Length: 71
Image 1 (cartoon, rainbow, N blue to C red):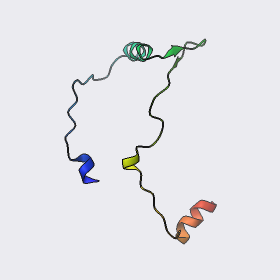
Image 2 (image 1 turned 30 degrees about the horizontal axis):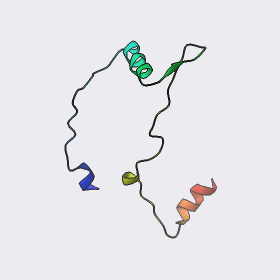
Image 3 (image 1 turned 180 degrees about the vertical axis):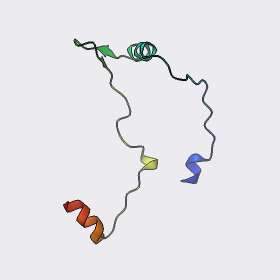
């Protein structure tokens, strides 16, 4: 996992604490809509876990884990 964090994140621009109006404006520019009740509705592209951060563990389930599953 170390290779994932090997490069330092360097954002092009940081916007600190934008207003609610600005957030709505950005969302509307990206295809968001205002509902009949005045709420903002958006659909995101990424809707799942990132594969490189997902670990699948196979093997025998411990008694403690089995108890958690059944509770």
